[in-house]
Length: 116
Image 1: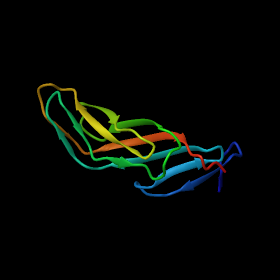
Image 2: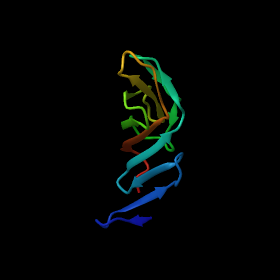
Image 3: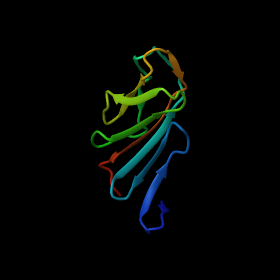
Image 4: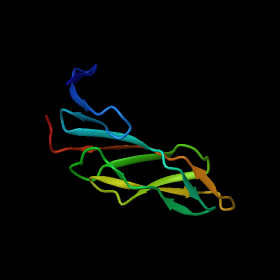
């Protein structure tokens, strides 16, 4: 257990890009990671990245924020979102030029039923 400034306790488990998450005492869970698979996308098209699995399962579908690592002409969304993971979608907003990104950063926020 760790203490934060407000005196609340939380459990931090995992220290690498594959297993990063925090479980707060009230059941709130924050999970994050990086997908480093290069994805090439034709102009004006979408391309799904590899499916991402959360380190631990949420009690319900979480909120997800996702952004690309490189390639300034991408919008990011997520598809197939579930309690256990999601698939990132790279959208090339430049209709005339193909582009490649080196992956994405993501963060998911939700709850677990295993509150302390």
